[in-house]
Image 1 (cartoon, rainbow, N blue to C red):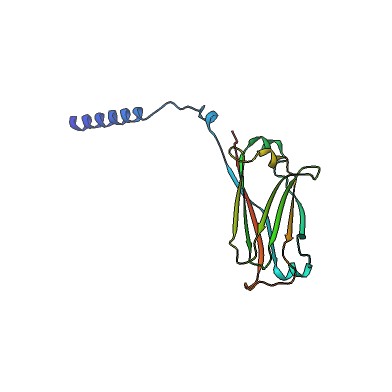
Image 2: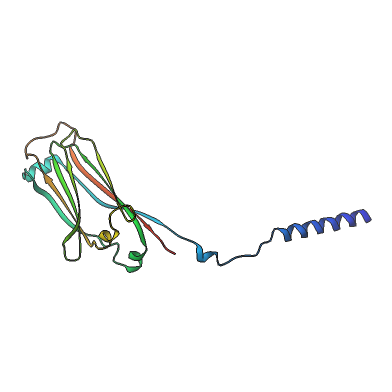
Length: 186
C-alpha cells in the first residue's frame, strides 16, 4: 500500500513538473509582425486566329488585321494599388502561319494615351514559340505603368502577304498572356 502511494505521488509530481515545464507565456503581439504576401495569378489576354481568317481580311504589308481595346482596371481600388509590391506579365506566342506577323499590346491611361507598349515580331512558320516575361517593380519596369493603365489595346499586323498558306496542319496565331501580382497585406 505504501509502495502504491509512493508511485502515485511520483507519477503526479512527474506530470505536474512536465506540464509546467512545457508551458510558455503566450505572445499575442506576434500578429503585429506577421507579414502576409499573397500572390495572385490570372489570365490577361488570349487571342487565336487561323491563317484563312488572316487571308480573308486581305490586308498585307503591315496593316492591322485585328485590333481591340479592352478594359483593364485591377488597380482602380486604392487599397489594392497601395499594396502591390511587384508584378510579372508573361506573354506566350505561337505562329504556325506562313505570315510574318507583328503584335502590339498598348497599355492606355484614362485618356486613351499609350503609356507603355509591348511589341512582338513573329517570323513565319517554322518559327519557334516565343515567351517573354516582363517584370514590374524592383529590378523591372516602374509599377506606376501598371497602376495607371485602365485599358489594353491589342493589335495584330500582317507583315507578309494575304495569299500564301502554311504547310502546317491547321496554321494559327495564338497569343496567351498571364499576370502574377504580389501584394503586401500587413
